[in-house]
Image (cartoon, rainbow, N blue to C red; front, side, top):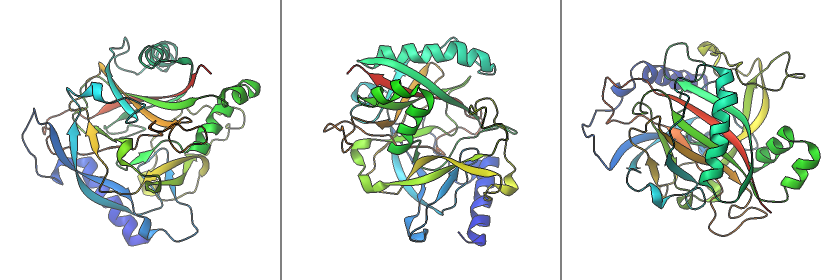
Length: 332
């Protein structure tokens, strides 16, 4: 990536954060079944052969250039029953929570985690075990440690999914569970107000092809105590924007997938999604079509991204959301 392209990209990002709707003319429609938006994808043509790209866990920054494409986005409302984690890779359910502000780390881990485990067992047949290994809170507000990410991606590669199983479960149990069906599912929910600002879009897995997915390294900030404490939750700090595109102080601790553009992709979103609703995003499924244990027609993963909806009112509150990442295991 050249210095000029980095500066250009950084400038566009900063402008969109200050006033994202300056970039797209607003369209007034509160009951629309569809909107149109700009989506950002990895630009494969700008990646030198034989190199592996990276993204950062704590910033909307990457080593590669992004290419923008205008796409239609279909509203899921009233059609939720047509989509499932098996057929499309995602699902939307009404599931109110006792937790409202998500400001107490202990309450999230001790109370909300149990709600998520119960929800998954209720909504997905055959689930026998859920292990929650991570959560991220994103707030589009000054000083927030994490903000919405505007790049089409998938949270884990198949290899990274297996690593997560072995990392978070005892060795003997992990090897046994890996023989059966396992998934990583991200449970996504708005906080306090509807996600009208910077909503989340998903791509129906059935409109993707394997070549769309590009493995990239996931960089984490180095921590001196990581050798003895591998839990990053609650330790997030806002990164210095002047160093977003530097790898100094970072290390590779994961692998995600960026998604190349494809005109066949079909985008969806839950318009004005409320805190009483959850979106299940499948990051990986060992029974997904094309995997070693794969079954025809089973979705492997769900590409997703935040986006700027031109229908968003100018006075809409900034998006707040929580995503909880879960290892999900099934009866053999």
